[in-house]
Amino acid sequence: MSDHDRKEDEVRRMLDAPPRGQVPPDLLPRVLDRGTRALRRARVLRRLLWVLLTAAAIAFTVWASAAEPWRPPPAGVTPPFQGW
Image (cartoon, rainbow, N blue to C red; front, side):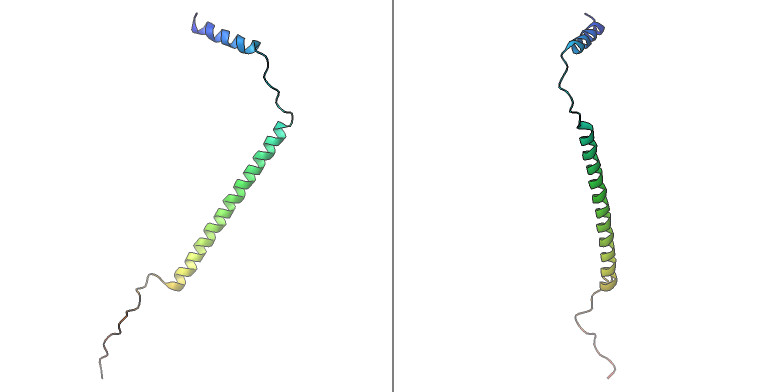
């Protein structure tokens, strides 16, 4: 039996097999509703993350401008006084 004959027999068996279960009639609206909700959640989450990232960048900028972490800390010892 050739490969072509085997495939043809398999297709004939599939076509002669009893039909499988019915698809519920309300499946499409349910799937569309679920997909719409998932997209809406993803969009809200993405916007929330952008807002948090922007707030963190602003908070870091305000802290850095107030604390000036790039400057060296003040010396713990006063320099010697000269000129008396």
